[in-house]
Image 1 (cartoon, chains in turn brown, blue):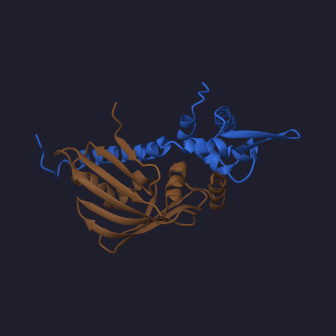
Image 2: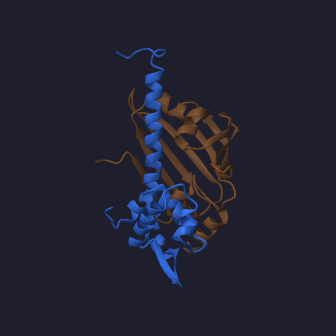
Length: 155
Length: 115
């Protein structure tokens, strides 16, 4: 069976490419990225701000049942072309991970299917590899010092 | 529960991932770990069993207490694979697809019917 989500991460490079084919028309796929209430559902986080325009910015936050912020991320949108392209930065606040650059390309395959190509550039090869090592860190970091500690151990 | 010694299966579970993050900085007893979750103590014990079986967690005995600690070496081994990262994105995108499909159905009145 062919995998729907594919990751290309060449050894020794500070980038990776995530490719995914969707059983959705292009406009609906794009909508899932720009409608705050929909982003919240599939990302599992609260959208504090999402300005879909060049030089706009966004901010996501997850609060646990005890009311503590367990995840906060933000970024700036550099390019915004509806149904085609979003270029943005991504920063996980209060974590040791440096800011990354994301190129999102949305493509129509057929009237009913579409494709997303997400090209992520990291600060260094080591930082990319750390991100791959701790996939669950993204979107669910608990106490930051613990996370930092784990990463230090992996070094 | 069938203890399958598959690390990827082990870290596919959100509770087990949370446990790994919890013990990342300090060794903890099963009781101390369980306090961080709403899940029952026996359920947490089962998660600890699975994580131990696939060597993501190690145990240290101090007196009568057993402390769980992360096995950084094994974590690094896992890390050399891309699969968990791919799975995280796959789950996320599957969710996106499901949400948008139901969105499409709900809003089809306003959109021109393709049939």
